[in-house]
Length: 132
Image: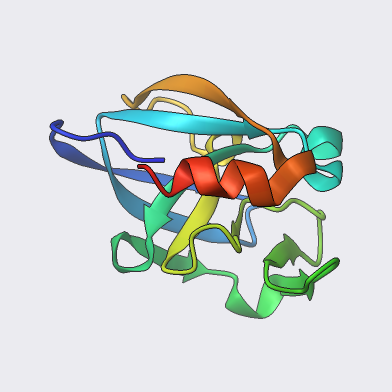
């Protein structure tokens, strides 16, 4: 999740093979969610929530493949070549992308704090996000 009260900077990132590339405008300090759901626990995804208007896919639209499970509300997007999910559409934030902080290019100046998110008990955890 993005922080408040810090100047916006532009970051870049993407998948392992470089087919999928994005850029986004984010605060200099962000709050990340470390989720324990079945998907995130296996991949180590660190969620940085970025509003749709602050995110730009600059390469690789045709390289993305989609996967949905459970309710189908979240759309997980993977690079067809290397399999990395560098960002996706979360059900918790329908007006934002969830960007994997670990997929940012090296050398960015974003600082972050990590907060646990109980995705295994999504409905109860989602209620807590509503307070943000």
